[in-house]
Picture 1 (cartoon, rainbow over the protein chains, first blue to last red):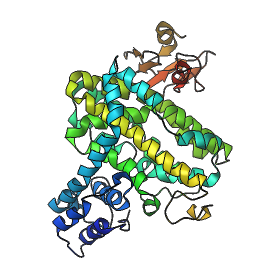
Picture 2 (picture 1 turned 180 degrees about the vertical axis):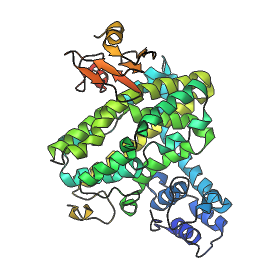
Picture 3 (picture 1 turned 135 degrees about the horizontal axis):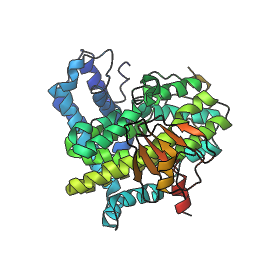
Picture 4 (picture 1 turned 60 degrees about the vertical axis):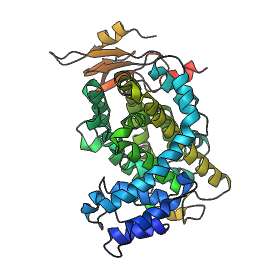
Length: 342
Length: 76
């Protein structure tokens, strides 16, 4: 993947560094972050953070891998993470408090949360109403995460121990195809995109997705890359898995309704059954077990779970409101989206 | 409702390997280490993942596997 186009001063400064051109003062870049306003909808902030996180995954072929651990990039990353985490804590506070104050085992409280969290459902829209171009746009937004599916939660593995580590590895092993490279979930997603006339190349649509889509992916990297936030990382995984089985069935049904075919639906069919297993393991054997072994992590486990649900809702609201206005939900695309096809 | 004893009777692992059975409250039964499960119609269904969730509410559309439908039922 190549470095995405900048969407503001922070991104422009980062491009200067990462491509070996201009070398702006890190303090000047960090100063741009102050007072970022609507953090989750700030294109420059979210794309810059996404870019800095990507240095820890497969990176950009036009950027020197040494930038992953340079103090300048880490300083900017830290400066971007502070307002992001503060905004997430602010927006999730009341839901987190309700779950912490409720009675019963944490697993039951987390399932209850995921089944009752208010907000629109993209999967239900895909199931019943979406037109072909809207389903294609949905796949593009989801691809920012699904083309590196499971990777952000894998960072939590070395940060937990014993039976909880074994349970998390069991989930991730399945995500990575259980030893079968042709069943890697990220690769199955790329096949679904190809079957729907889209490019499954990693980062292929990076310049087209809005801030909230990048934020949806960034929160997972924020939680995964900080040992301090390991509770939030597993809480996020729990909520993600617990909101996957039934929605995957709805999306698969939408793909068939619109005639995209069996190859397109395969990824979602796989997730109906896989995530019915993963949600039980993630909520019970990882989240609840971690809270029992390290009770001080319970608030962050719930914080991670609520963050997952919050970002799903914000993404759904933005996409549905664009579509209701007859507009594309992507940057630089007219409605109709014939030009989205690869 | 399918009972755990039925699940054990109907699942099979390789010789020398034990099947671990985990009951999830209000949810499926997890089987770790099974190679096959025999479904309600007597068909032998191969197990293709390290752990599988067997439907216990009887309403899954992916039977014998759980598809999360029990969550919809208990909210009614």
